[in-house]
Length: 406
Image (cartoon, rainbow, N blue to C red; front, top):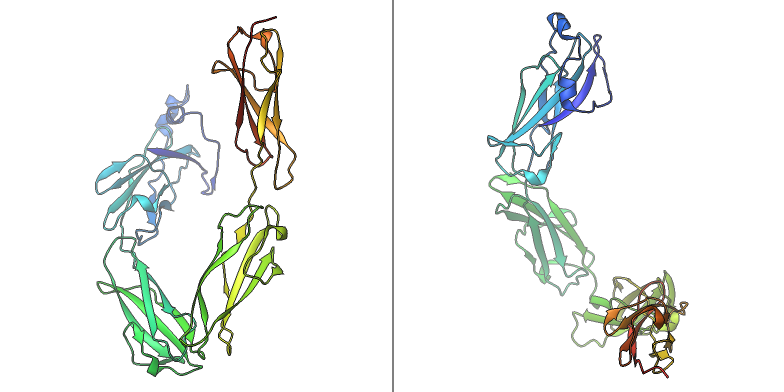
């Protein structure tokens, strides 16, 4: 059970108080107080409730006092809480039962008992049943920018947190009035340029009706549209040239379409070509793109690609050298990286990892071999990893064989 603490004053108001060190201490009378039990009055039995009043499977359950317990002696009161579901006690919940612990049709109860350390009240009980959560729906109309040549198609989708099956009722409106169409499609011969067509989708489940979902389009003159637009690569670096992957559609099959490009960096237009090279951006900047298609007569609506953020380019080195070459056991060897490069012009930094015959050694660039047990024909290796403060590059390794001392 979970416990909490309240201080009941004779006059009725409640005040918070510090929790005692242990529940056992709070429930036992203090030394010398046994005689006082004869005049001790028990606290009143409270009433409790579970909120919300009619919970659904998406609701957290919370218990609360409907009528607070009273103690005329002004004693420190504690209470114990026990939840149960379908008759099985659940000891892992206190004031709240999370929604994901409940299921449709379950019977949950909470039992609360209050004590002043001497007397314990009768158990207060509240019971509730988890109800059904109505399904939710959404709907899209395709195409998004229809012309008088297009068939309108309503595509509803939805979900039910209880996993129950459900269906949809569909109603089409034209300029706000009932069109009489209740199927998923509107044929092209029913539409006129300038009309506003809306679809209302209502999820229905065993007599229960969920919240309506609507979508609206306006019938336009035939114009080309961009149906898909993506910036590639999707995770660009400062060395990349950005391109666009796009798909378009035009109701008039004989039209020759031309694309109009707009590139932005941090919201500022920087290009109008089909590609954007690395001169226009640096690490951390956001690049966006929009494309509109023109069929020689009408320019279609622009479509905006999901912006990309320019990432860090990893640093690189071309090699690693151990000096001196062919070291002796008495030498101090140094590990030198060569050929640093970083497209972001970050300051160079490295990590070092020495090994002797495969066993780990120091992690700095210098190694005094006299501090280790080194003999002729041992193999000394140094791995160097370039770092730019954001990422590490590819590590390179150099090796030397120890020769006999001269």
